[in-house]
Amino acid sequence: MLVAASGWLCAQSFPGGSSPSLAFVALVPFLVCARLAPGARAATLFGALWMLLFAWGINDWFAPAVSRYFEKPWSFGFAGFLAVTLLTAAPATVLFARFLRCIGPRPRVLAPFLVAAAWTAGELLRSRVLGDPWGLLGYSQASRPVWLQVADFSGIYGVGFVVAATNAALAELLLLGAAQPRASRASLFVAAPALVVPLLAFVYGSVQLDESPAAAADRRELVVVQGNLDFRQQWRLTSHVANLQRYRDLTQSALADERADLVVWPENAVTFFLDREEALRKSLAGMLGASHAMLLAGGPRVQSLAPQEFRNSAFLLGQDASIVSYYDKQRLLPFGEYRPMHALAFEQSDPGPVREFSPGPPEASLLDAAGLPVGVVICNEALFPDPARERVRAGAQLLVALTNDSWVGQWKYAEQAFEQSVVRAVEERRYLVRASTSGPSAVVDDAGQVLARTRDDSEEVLRHPIQARRELSIYARVGDLFAWCCAAIVAAAWTRLRATVRRLP
Image 1 (cartoon, rainbow, N blue to C red):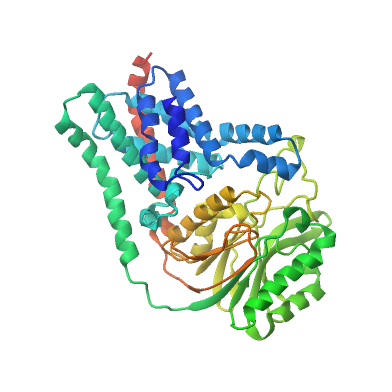
Image 2 (cartoon, rainbow, N blue to C red):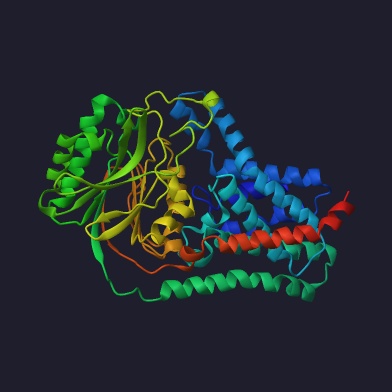
């Protein structure tokens, strides 16, 4: 019951819950129970149970969204939730709980650091090996920029380390209190070193946020258009003209009074093959009028017809109706954009002109928007650190995330996806522009502060200036070195604890 309550309480620190502050205490019951687990089977059960309750708490939208997308019963979506959770998320918490059992119930000064390192190693396993970055602990603080600043050298894993270390220190106090009820000095000695971690993170974050912004070397005016089209109508052939007209009208109204350098439409804003439709390209170029703006829009692209191969792309359209450049999505969404197992291939009822995409080439291609190198990530690519990092290392001075939130139809999902993309801005120290089909669309500065955003499920136009940035953050240079160091420390510690494991029942 304590483990289940811990998982559910931790979920309440994410969008849709009570408060991000809960993350700093929610793990404590789970940590104590895992340290006191009577056997390896109990530790395994604790790890799996915690993840199931946590995953349901943040992903209760999953079952109805999958059922709606594939037009299947709710039980189909729930089965998918169980499969995804048990295969891609639970293994990390199971290994984490078994490692905590190896540490044992005896209070130790270094235990909180080992626990935080083990949690970080587990999240590294879940994200990079099992391919599931959703709901990492550090994302619970995405709405609080002061805690995010450590991500510029450690990535999202460093933020999770800070939160996990705080929980581990509190768990250590409980374990010591149970073993030595009157050991107040010993409690301070055991907990104080680990509690320094959140203190240092808070000070570092405060200093970073208080620093004066650098002089504006390159300021651009951006317009983001959020059409909020109905998902089921979006891909129907009879709706193509109406869909395009909505985006045209919103864009023209935004450019009527003020100029802009770049107009951004979300993923799937264009529901036809823009690279094959010259007349429609000329129509879009005419829409830009005398603003001298360029249009960045997401849509399908024909790679080849024999054999048929299509890409999920972002097009940069110039004033002369030419496609200046394009980016093909590299990391595709399983089942939604490609079928990893044809025996389990479920088709949505109205998939549009393309049923399956092919990934783009691995090169980090940039879009040159009138001298501004733009790095594009599409939909789920924004949930992973690597795509954004590759764009920045290739020279991107602005990050743009194009996404389609309409297919889920749940504000909770959209808010979680948005907050995860915010962290990319801090990791790379770049402004990030998010263009969503149904919201939220936003402009985020290089400190993770949301400068402007739209509402969920609304038809809106967002206008805001951005600043180009050229400097590379430490994280952009070294990547997940911090998380890999945590994994190495845990591996070495687990090796030394083998003798203890053998003696445990």
